[in-house]
Image (tube, rainbow, N blue to C red; front, side, top):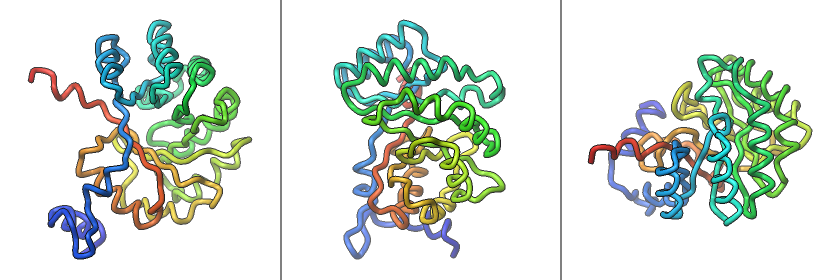
Length: 247
């Protein structure tokens, strides 16, 4: 049985193994950010619930940016993505200058650590390195060191450890962890073992982009991650409220 089949079999078995290892416990510490929240009504519902939220910087308008700044000023937990997923079919049109200014405003307003995602291009290692080389340091320069700057790891001809090493060489300050795409151009769970080979300077902080905390896909990824970074601080984001429309 290969590793993938073994993982699926394990997920189908009893929630606790002979050693008392619980799959539910594995995911219990994962922080979940609600994405797709820029609409005022959706934002207000999550804000009142005290739920961590995720916004796409490229999609903000003055009103939504003001709401985000007020939220982090009051201690709200926020993750800010560039919005590269939205521009995946036309990455050359990604409004990076605007994204830098949105990151700056939120960083300056925040009284608590915010998670920021560094530049990337969905599905392309080379274009991600180009975006990182052009805009990565500009973005890092406006992110206060109390915040977390996470770098997305795209897949391609380069192994993950080679890709991460090249990305590190482009940045003038250390990154605070990695982010793995889990929706479009998803990072395969079986490649997570390569995190054992990334430079030791990369903190064991990992965000799964675009996946629900309650999904089997996340459980599978956490099992792989536990074998290489058992001490990892983990989070994920997903737009879940759309599934409830009509209920």
